[in-house]
Image 1: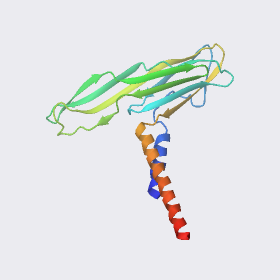
Image 2: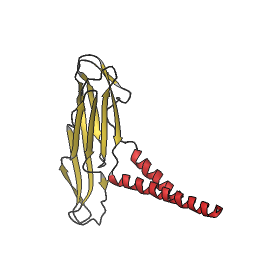
Image 3: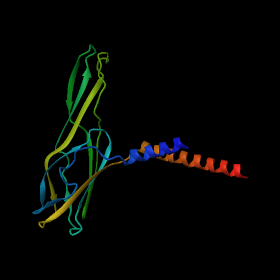
Image 4: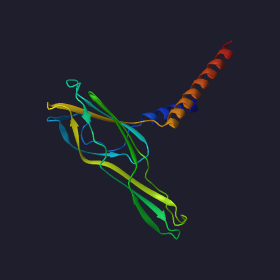
Length: 194
């Protein structure tokens, strides 16, 4: 029973784990603006290959205001490739990412994902031509966050990790195992008292 409960708890924690990226400097507690422009912001798309949801919303006094955060304006990917003799060379290319923005009055939702994840598996014995390391960087570097009003408005920001299907599967498996063990324990108790 303990194993099932532990598996369920670990799975739920992995689903609810907070995102670790640096995104939007200082909007967590609200950013005030006027004249339709908030300020130039810097943000990164986390280079971990995971999917994130970014939410931007206005204060209750401005429910109809729309918010726009432009997609990343700078990116690069650096791949390390083995020469087969213990040396390596670099291959530069653009970093791939997805950016889907839904703008509704009072609330903008962005789903983003860096297609690649940073890694380094290079050793002196890595075969010729194998890409053994990669570094992905995608970021909005001083982009202008805008709102559809000339009156002062406060915008809030939050980011959350979107669970991968395997995380949901692990959570369901762990909770199911915990439930089965509890039923078995109750049945055993009922037989013992009969």
